Image (tube, rainbow, N blue to C red; front, side, top):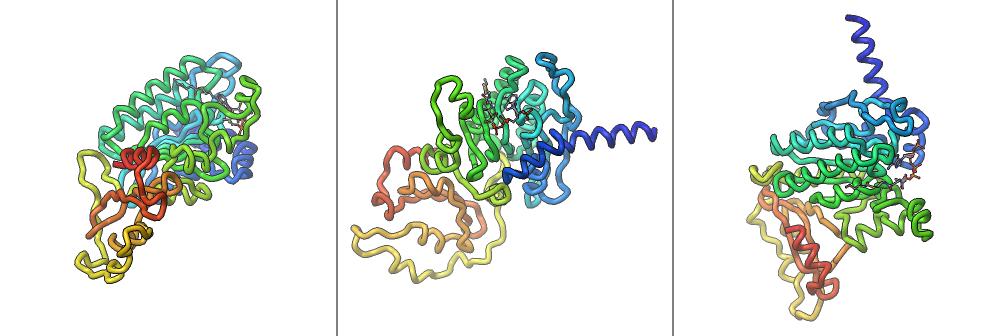
Length: 345
Ligand code: HXC
């Protein structure tokens, strides 16, 4: 019995070590946390229950049979955020660049299906180079399975993606189908493929930032709903977002105790909106005054600023807010602001 327990401990150690010390050090040197460190920050302390820690890939081509890491580049399971159950997968860039094999895909699909079954949000932490090149079509088929579950989960449970490293191929197509995408400034990228492959194929030289950095997607394309300074801030904001959302379409939006009297008078509103309709004012100032405890979670704050969207609470109940912003382009609706509002609704 003792030797079985020792073997179990050895394999757990191996799974926790991911791609090894040198690659973990390289990850930290880039200002990024590891897949497991991210899960620890995202979830309530000690709440994480891991699935499939010892799963390995089944590839044999290109010497892959000799290169196996337990867990195969993705940490999956469930835990809680402020007591609410959420399902999580976190890509490990230190193992084959977090790339997706058939076995790796099956781990993610299991989490997606389980979340739908119990009615809980799915949170994906991405830091990965897409389809595992060595596995070819087995990997592509794995993405097809994940994309199908993305579609099935849409409108059923919230799907949140956090882009936390250079992400390519399927590791951006799948997040692009989810409800909320957050990025980390200067370390995360969303592109079809990386700058080196672009140079080889098209002979064009482009930086990772120009190709799909957080600034591009949060301010120009509108693909990302938020861009944050570092891993810690991004994960803290996911925790905040989850607090506003119902766990599934079978549940009402969460309520929590409010310290603001819903019948309070706010005299400054009398003068906030100018008598002259030609004069602009800041709608966000108005929002902060009417919601509970001035707590407003803005979505896509850097894109299509002529409309403001986000979550807040009124008398303790979660609400979604969509408001024209007279301060930017006189608050008119154009293509981007219409898309932003429609997507949010
Ligand atoms: C296997 C991969 C990999 C991949 C990276 N690695 N991407 N291994 N399959 N797709 C490995 C590298 O070989 C390297 O291994 C380690 O991960 C780190 O990668 P680097 O290139 O050294 O890191 P970096 O310079 O930061 O660049 C990261 C990157 C780049 C931008 C993600 O690696 C890249 O462009 N990769 C290819 C992206 C791509 O074209 N993916 C396929 C997309 S097609 P070592 O051993 O050196 O540490 C797709 C189809 C989906 O996904 C469609 C579904 C239907």
